[in-house]
Length: 258
Image 1: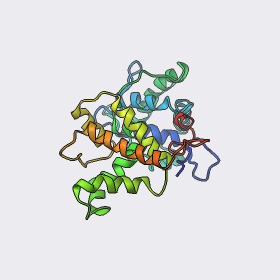
Image 2: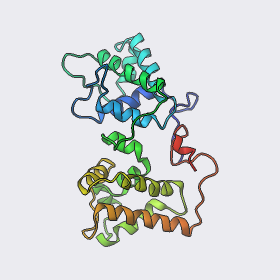
Image 3: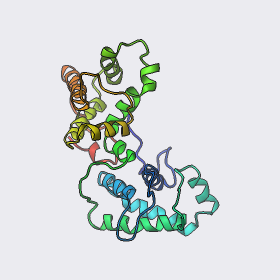
């Protein structure tokens, strides 16, 4: 299924402040020092947001425009308050207001836009960034390797057959760009060179609380998952889509990659 393009203002699902919702989601993923930006130093949440903004040309510019608009209208105005009520809550630190926190975002968003929308590569720092960075792997792990899936989707499957059942369900009836994207994203994750503890934390952030088989490290298990999907794709003669890749939103640079 093609993901909706939040930049399509004419789409039926279009909302008024989509990028403000996105950046507040990024901040809401940080438990400590959530709004700790200073004019000189971005917070962990802002760093995560900007790294993901490199995949979406114009995202930071739009976020800046939306923040300025709500500040101009006033956060307590009926139309702004109604929108904010549907967004992740702003748990601001003592001594700051919501307006202060939003204003503190703007220098970093503007500097990012004016510097060519580039950041230094880094391992994701928050659960939000992990899931944005590896969205298809997150769908697999969160949808099929969560305890609720183990209990309700495949209650009668033996542990040593679970991968086979889960991956068959995820793969579906034919080759799908999402499966190919999972293979690529597993490769991206393993290329980060994380140790076992850091890899466990990454897999957990991506939505899984289901450990690998006892015989496997998480690295070897992820390699087996990628190999299984790759073999099925190859057997089915998978070819990358000619147009936009539906595994990613239409405005995401990865939707154009071949």
